[in-house]
Image (cartoon, rainbow, N blue to C red; front, side):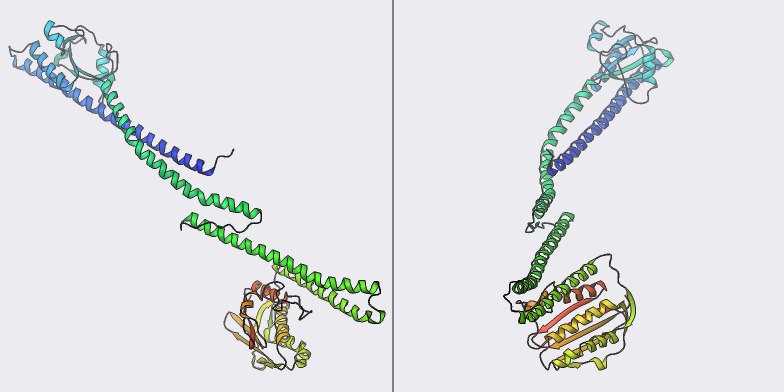
Length: 473
């Protein structure tokens, strides 16, 4: 079974904390050991030097009261204060005087007469720092310091066991571990909560992604912070919203295509069946064949429009930009619709005041945009109404506006006029020539040129379409 992210994250952080604390303990142990060893060496060295100075002063003063017993009492006092063993040896390294209580009673003890190898003594003498040795007769390692007597009469040796240092380090380690338990527990709780907080949005995203794979786009990730995780949650929600909209567009597109194809095909099939089975008399077949012809043309226009959309939305599609006169192209479109304009007695305003404007764009595509907008304006202008044109230009863009009188578009319908297959007339029967794709194509073309198109309308007064285009694409 795969280890969950929470366990992996918590385990990794906990391991790092444990290793860090262990490293601190090891470093502290090393530092404490070095410090204790240095201090022990200093103490033992001072003890040896003090006894050596006492022996030297007694020899120089030739004091009759000076004796081995006087030396013993000095050695014993220093050994008691420093809690160490002190010996005086002859030049060959044999112990003659010991600071223990047994020696003062019998002038002998277990150490008296014990030979210490001169090499061992010289090694301690040569060491500038702490030396740990058994001196050849200790069972366990001891700290040791040596001071050489004058005229090679012998050596003063001071030793102390390392067991006390080990015991001290064990107590320090014990205290460190005991004192670290509570902070460790608190730290692990904090790490657990922090890890849970970090991984919770990721778990929710994983669940939401699985739901989206099943077609459920209702899941959203709660945004509880403004850090990277919070930004990721915001981005994920935005992605979900986009996918949800795309899914709605896809469903709507399929439904609209199905409807747009089904209606003419049903009409075509019904009339043809009526002709074949004799339901439609021969003298009326020409009339119904004309209807079939119109519906086939409508299907052809729809397919052509859908192919155009596919080409325009393709990333590989390239604009064929050339310089041309925008006013001249607008006039050509209006002149091509002169008959329809006269039939509805529409008044055209603004064309006579337009200036020549040269732009660099795809001439054929811009012609299609202008044609679609003029066609819509004529289609929805009331009898005896008006269509007004206006063009403005600055250093970077041109702004084209076409406004027509008429019923207008309800305010609630305005956000949807550029969608595929959208028609204000929901019955879809007002105009059989329309496919509902013209404005979507116009928007796609303008957007591909780096421009913006918009619509405004007041019911029973006017409808206006306006787009902005870069002069030099």
